[in-house]
Figure 1 (cartoon, rainbow, N blue to C red):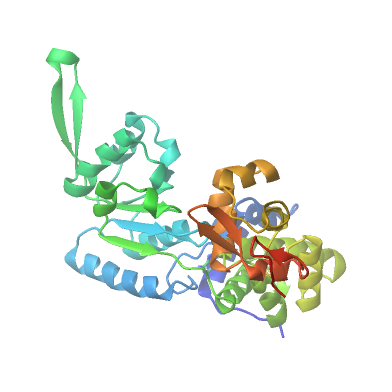
Figure 2: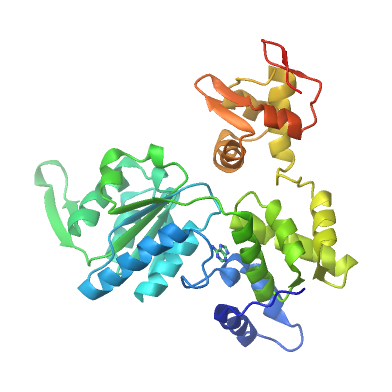
Length: 360
Ligand code: ADE
């Protein structure tokens, strides 16, 4: 059965893309390929799948802010990458009927970067700062008064002649996003009115995301095909959407562009994404701990050096799902694999750790 979505936004997205069509080269597809993430981003709560508890809270907050004719409280979203923090900021701006400015903490290196962006804001606008845990101290202190009382203290002159100028700002909403809420300073965290964790998606939700994306991209997919991709998407819509494209490439070559369960499974096997959604890096990490460190614990720096990845990628990208799925454990003495990881990687005969208990 092919799934055809009745999501109105499909039509909007497709029209946006088709408006740029050149009849000779059919660039509507190219346009969507280049701006793939933007093209498929939901723009309203109706088309935003998953995170239902958060959506319910936000709908109330937005309605109340509109009735009060005030900007929204500052919001902090945290959780693993790819779960839709930026997308949600876009949805909120759209629902509030205001503009959204997007930046990220590493781009706000000098004081004038953050001052410039704050002074460019218009009333009620939303400023989205990604990776906000990486904000430097100076930028963070500039944000305190901007967030709390909507002003900037600027200094002019040098040493004895220094003067402070208080510059009012329009009321705005800051949406901060981070994969590491624990690395935010207390004073910054305290200035957010709403702090919410984004959860991994269920397979059912991911299958809906996949079906929606396939609809926008004009890819034919049946229910079992969507479920097969969902199972290997590590609870993450960004990964699900990437896999839809890769599986679609395979389907175009092998099955007239149609994705079914068989095509999805074969394409994902070729991509070396296993039934748990683990890729070669995940498996190398687990195998290293099992084979070289007797199941762990072992420090993350040692793991990173041994498999040739940087620590931040392992911590931010690989680990959240391995921890959530119970394959990996974080202990004060380092990372340990679980019996489930031994099972998953077919180390049936190995014995775990120093107590030498046979596991299986
Ligand atoms: N694409 C990425 N995230 C999505 C979501 N939450 N809902 C629908 N489509 C998406």
